[in-house]
Image (cartoon, rainbow over all chains, first blue to last red):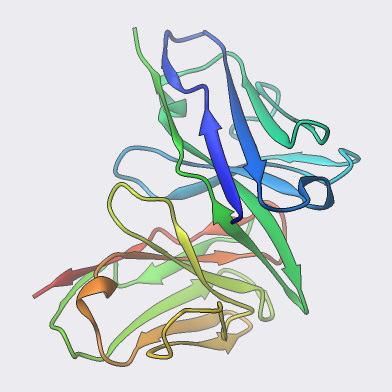
Length: 121
Length: 107
């Protein structure tokens, strides 16, 4: 079974840092681009960052550029998101999602269950 | 960035109703349009890629149409398990962007 399990969320003070992890299983992790997507409480989905299979390319939403760093360890089947200079606007459930590519198509599937990050004093 | 706008933001419907949700892109995205379903407290679930290709195991009452800037998701006969929030997402250009969501509620 293809599975993604996030961890590392929690309560952090404004200006603080947190590192999220996503453990992958059931597929050849090193062959896929991976993504982080977040959802603020009661709000919609926001793509945060992507990293290609061999880490040659990383991409960020403007809202996190310069503060967040995406990385991966293909030997550990794991994806990471280092989040620095956190603010209340970063409070959200963070999902990792696998990038799937088909004929003239690209989509996220599956998604992990999410990990909640709360930034508050 | 490509803006995705869904309408309506919410709707009330009954079991058995035909329901259509619209998604409009701020520029041409060809058929790079996906649909996801999300139930409360759960992760989004992938439904449709390339505007109209159903994911394996998605019931045939779901269908997607469109290209360019205008897209629709239709549920031909709403079932109790279909009450959820639906999101469109463009995969034509980074940053990948989502619509604001359409909440389908029980009337």
